[in-house]
Image 1 (cartoon, rainbow, N blue to C red):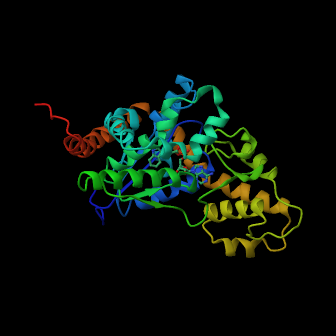
Image 2 (image 1 turned 120 degrees about the vertical axis):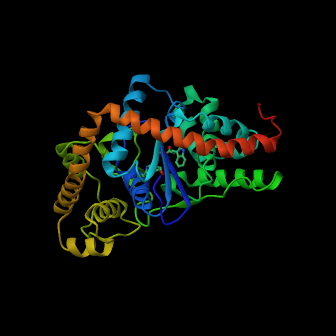
Image 3 (image 1 turned 135 degrees about the horizontal axis):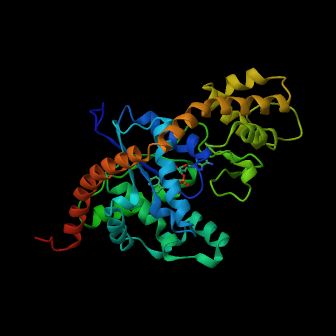
Length: 335
Ligand code: TYM
């Protein structure tokens, strides 16, 4: 890892269930890129989290490569950051088991994502889905993480990780750093274009309202043209205008302007023109990313080298924390 200005650790992960979409980029990836120049960053393709819901193995395998290629294409840099695949570092599962024993059933039951997913898939409420937040806590705590760049939907999981870490620290002695979240100023919750009251998600039923990072230009334009707005004609950021506010947020992120500047730019414009402009600027922004993605996907050996190098470093770092934890809970260290 390169020497950076600060020794603070940044950790984040994305799970390869469904394809990466604008919400992931705005909520998490953009900050992950930015933070690389300032901190020691560790970023994971969280494949172990993906099997908590029903999965087609070939899709999971393909997406794991996809995610790594996209990590590189958007500018995550293996010279600056540790990039790896979660299942290549067994310490994640090992620490998760220990943390399960320090997490109460009631706490895990209160997780809104567990409740939502249980309602959505009543046929597959498995133990892994229930323990998902302790695996996520293990991901974070293994690396003595200071900052976790995430979107708003992961805030409750991060709070659980903090609670469990604090509990462990006070029962034994300081073991884990207590991590803080880093949320984007704008766009901590990007909404589905067809339902601006709902979060945009990789696996939404409303897929027509989800813009994927790998969508082609026509698809992106079609999705923006159909975006739900409202029945007046003001292009302003306001709580009672979730559709327009969401589009303004997307525009300001991809155009590199503030919301106020975007409001000024579109004062008096029609909704149709506005949506067209937002779509065009997203297409423009994603084009070089998609080209780089194609390049990396043709170089799977290179992707595998990055995965290996990242996992080797991650295992080394993770082991330091795990052996400390094993000692503290009373496990005899093997000779
Ligand atoms: P995941 O894979 O669902 O999402 C990845 C990241 O994208 C953010 N995000 C959004 N932000 C704004 N608007 C949206 N519509 C939107 N949709 C998704 C998420 O908040 C997340 O930051 N459990 C995690 C993955 C994970 C993780 C971790 C994250 C596993 N271990 C440790 C941080 C640290 C998840 O499912 O994210």
